[in-house]
Image (cartoon, rainbow, N blue to C red; front, side, top):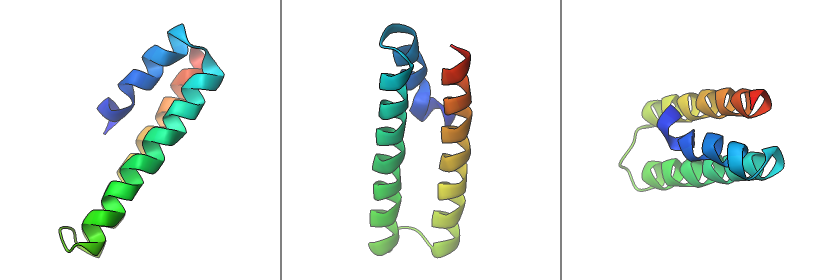
Length: 70
């Protein structure tokens, strides 16, 4: 899921860290909303949704660390 946050890293280079963090958080919440919708719609099991949220959160944390390094 790291590719979901590639734009955020580019944003950190051009827009600044604060804007990149805001975009990162927006991306995280949007993706989590999709996962919730798929779970409620029966397209994902609880186990699948949990794993996707964990993977997404891990990618988000890595992205925020990368933003700090920019």
